Image (cartoon, rainbow, N blue to C red; front, top):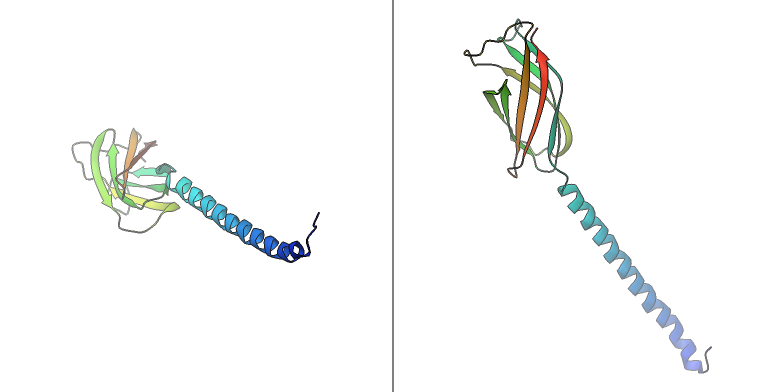
Length: 147
């Protein structure tokens, strides 16, 4: 209840001040939500996974030839992939891109290790070790039968 006519003149100003304060809180809350989402995005663990890998003993490429898809889900860019076959280091690939988030790489490699021959019909464990620009590491493996 308003008893003084001056109070009537102050109410629109009070409403305006409250509206500005609430708008400021809304912007502040919006900024906090955005920062939280950015933090959540950055705290997602960097991961790689493998799909459709094949190991060919006879190919138009130098043999033995490994190919497949590497799915990457990461904040920082991928720096390198290290390939191990049955626990033996084979080869590494360096990457210099600005890709982040979810993407797929077509992976191709000729296996240079002559001390471990790849024999058609045998099973091999493929292990890729991914190193990201922030020095975090993720691994993925699969079993392939050489064809």
